[in-house]
Length: 336
Image (tube, rainbow, N blue to C red):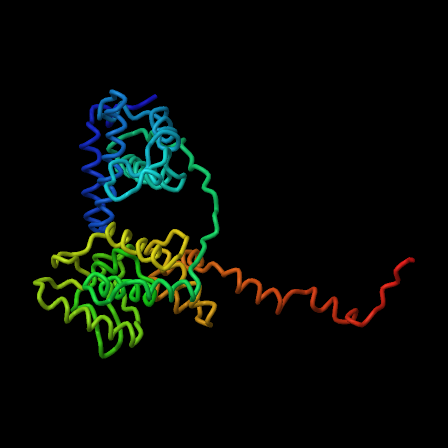
């Protein structure tokens, strides 16, 4: 039975307690924005079902119904101006649903631990099984085609080229890329600094970049001279480029290059990390570039390509040792 503590609390008040605590713990502005988004999404569901925005309304059954609605009834990209009708399918992915539910679970667990409530409505709710689909990384040839696609005679084309070069070279996240200031670039050392206020792990880091990437960055900085903005990746009007706009631009370049695969900024991170290992890089240095201390997280970004798997199999498969003694000419006798 639900206890007394928290029963009279409005959900907005509980969320504010949780959010303020996480802000005090140093969560990044982007993470806090995601909390706001996920909470607003849940409140929209409550309103849609004529449920009060109060703690007493949040039962285990309501939460399970919310999950079912997201999986089977919620339109994807609803109200998104830049998505086609074909992309606006019904039902969110298990990964997306689990991500949204994780915030609610974390919030109620925190409130219970702090003594604000004495019952956690998410305690008996499990995680939805997520299909483990292999990430299809970009090949060298595909990345070459992609980098050839932008029209560098235009500002937007040069900017997109620089953005893709940085993503490929640094294995950075899109938020890290779009937060690069000109002062974050050390041309002498050939490094870019990803600020701790932006990085997901809250640990700032320097990442190396190639000379070619640095030359392109210098070209873009010259083009940015007319804009009064300290950031590197800007739109045509001199404001910081929106992540959604960058994703759409990359899709356009992929289409122009004849690549019939879904390319996102994060795919550069997966592809770059995988090719780094296949080219002989070690996991410890890769962890430093990716910004992960947990090697399990690093391994998520290293999906051997089919070509690499085939090469390793041909070199190390035990069948090679088995067939060597038997590998002698033989004549097949056929019945007449």
